[in-house]
Image (cartoon, rainbow, N blue to C red):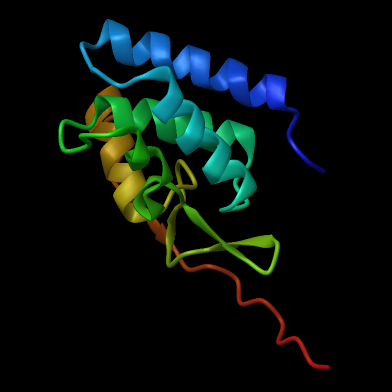
Length: 126
């Protein structure tokens, strides 16, 4: 299913407002391009991209909206049109280790990363 262009524009508008409020000089065009690219080219879901956008805005090391597409912002990788977990995830929040620690630092959540190994996907044979 494709994401409607209006939904992409709405997400970019929300992220632009947040970036402006946080004093980031990120233009709406750059944010829109990053959101659209993450959805259309990287295969991300709109909700994932919005969360990654808020994380990118909060990250002082992120200098441009392209940080919205950084792989480290997501707890899954897209492989052949489906999401696959990257490494162990946290038993408490379900994020990859880096995402768990980053979210905890931003929100003040006191839980400690508790790893759970990902399930192995069956091999695809042709």
